[in-house]
Length: 389
Ligand code: CMC
Image (cartoon, rainbow, N blue to C red; front, side):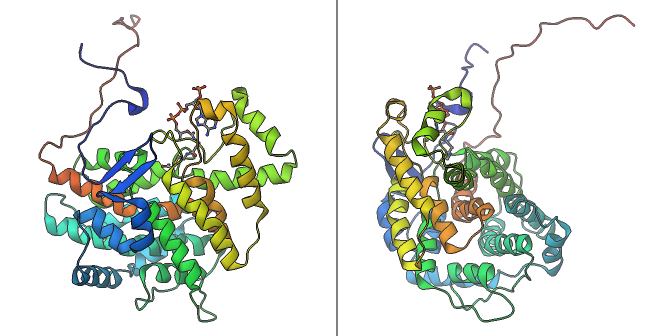
């Protein structure tokens, strides 16, 4: 129609009203339900933040306890679903394994797929929060050929996850509190980021009234791409390439600036932030702290810092207002924690899960929600006739 406007990448089009997350990209401000990210990341736990995002207010002590308890009771995967991981190749990317696993959840929980029933939304929320970390750890174990552990529900959410990843059947696993605290903080920083590509995917799929598992599995696939969540993996690959090529950081930056090279500085730039990503600031602070506390010395962190310094001083990056984003320093920390590079985006997915759930639920609370159905401008052939046969 004459009213249709062309907006590649939805740069200017709002498709929803939302109360969950506020971003001011020019000033580098991020708030969850009104609370500044700096305060949230310092004071809350992953599950408290999840509650805040999903239900809109901070939980009372008893609400949080009941939520935590319910999630702990749902961590087990059906034994058949556990075997499902064995059917996939050991060298499969853990993000593909994770999205397949989440998709498979709706084959097990056919009883709770109606987005208009509060009790279905509630149980799907609990199951996803409980089972996604377990599936993520199994994707990891599968890739390194180790046995899957059963969850230990006496442990906190993050400690349970660490044990499932790094524990073995051979010996007891002691959670390192430094690692646990740092991971919790990183997960919180990823919990929501308003209408990013994966959240918009969850909303679009959900707008057809597809169930929460199906919608979130689609979100995981959207997150997989290197321009979105996959960037944390791509940053580490890039840093290692710079180190191994021995060409030096300046030369690499020159290649990025020569756009014909097709090389982007991964972990830099953001659709919304035209200033330092507030999450990246917090992650950068953690990087030194965590590496020191874990006794890890990594030359990739030095390369990252040098790269940041050179880019921030360069006109190409200044003119385009390109700053480090959340993915720039996370990989160095995840590596120091012992996660293989291919698990980095999986960690992003666990972080983002509460945001996806909150948006899915907010959509069904909003009476104005309609099926998502973008318009197009047709630029193909006018009508023509098939050749006569
Ligand atoms: N390296 C080099 N040049 C870049 C980069 C980069 N990382 N990002 C943007 N540019 C240039 C781009 O070439 C364009 O230049 P010109 O105006 O001369 O054509 C200009 O900056 C604007 O870029 P754009 O592609 O129009 O910006 P966008 O808003 O569509 O893309 C982005 C945002 C995040 C996809 C992009 O900055 C990018 O590809 N970054 C690298 C991947 C990355 O780190 N992604 C993680 C994003 S944060 C975590 C998340 O939420 O997923």
